Image 1 (cartoon, chains in turn brown, orange):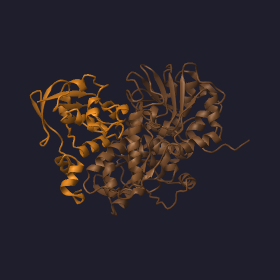
Image 2 (cartoon, rainbow over the protein chains, first blue to last red):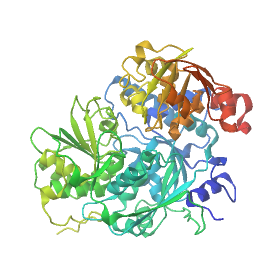
Image 3 (cartoon, each protein chain N blue to C red):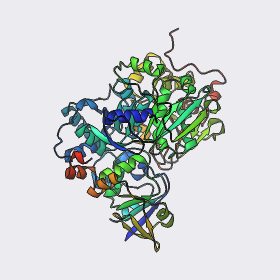
Image 4 (cartoon, each protein chain N blue to C red):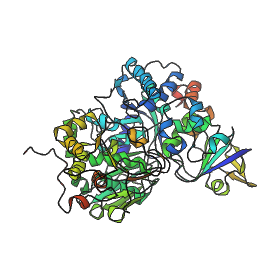
Length: 435
Length: 161
């Protein structure tokens, strides 16, 4: 019997020829990520490990302060200070704000993760790197600390669910809609402990960033990891970030799958996940026209340049509705600079949006746009849990950047066609050619 | 005797300890805000040795280890649920918070009930009935017996893994 791509990467990192679901193996960790929250707790745990004073391989340890940065108060400033001192003392990879951004955009864009890698991270959305054909999963701080000490971690080999996406996506539909639809179908614990392996002709009809959004949100179905195979689009992305020397793995034709789920994406409209679960997905045409107080576009799920282009396509020449705040959060400094170059920041500013520094802030109800009592938010982030973005009574609707942008203009939950009419969206997978 | 705190399905880590309180690693601070929004009566009234009994997929969401640490710091002896989210389960093992998988006990137990829980045997007594939790995989059991991964490594060394 053959192996899946996930099993092959785990086998290679366990020094085995074959691994099977359910087995527990010690595996070598290529990249070990921590943000300031997970790192702070990991540092405490690391200091309790006997005989561990130095990170075994500091070039595998990556630190990105992004949740409460630029620091919102003295407490978070002290927290980041402690993590910064540790990372620099350990000669690990430290991304200071200004040249960084949100961890899950920063690592791929700096060529730190690639096909065949095994990545763990003290953040559940570490699954994002599966977009590049890597095994990537979120862990807690103690696991991060143990892997600092020994360069390895223990992992149970997950069974894999294969998703085959057929057809071509409709106008305005991107990976965000496909993954919301998928989570809606299998529910928020439909892939718990399992790998989600994404296939199908439809993937080529979406911009590359869609894969990051989909792998990012595989955790919202409970998955251990989400993974794509490498193709020409992946290689193009990797060449763009100067990533070399990687190994492309492929699932065998006779690999064993826990389940195979086929989805025809030509049936999928832009989706909206109603409060308060990411699996509560519905087509935009059926969504209630609720009044909206705040819109957030960006973060680690939809903070890629393609997402900025999609939002700008709707916001160009428009104004945000009176009484509504529209906060744009580019995923990284690299995205921000590209958006500047393409004139997208002008579009946002002219539309009366706020362009924020790259931070997780609003997504976790931390800073830069915390919701008050009973407020309604349309957000391109990944979680609409009760209290996630602020007050417990606030309501969060998850959507793609076009729906979020349209809702910002309309002042109520709505799709892009209600703002721009029936014209086709501009292509977002390429930098526009200067006129 | 342990007091039962009964919770709903899909309790996520933001509910266990909201993100904005994760700016510290001080256990007593984390304990103080544990479940503060889902059950405002919890932080004030929880007693050492109390248990959480929750519906499926307990601990979904973020990978923050602050969640099991906050429950521990609040005095919670064990969490009983039909299923747990993966990262939370792993973190709980690593920090030594006992988790028991037992759908029957979850169905039987109500909020405020008294229960007797024997962590080692997995036996749960509530409303005059005794229920048996699913056996824990041997690898996990060994870490649990040591009280967490760090204590496990201290006792048995890296080879022990």
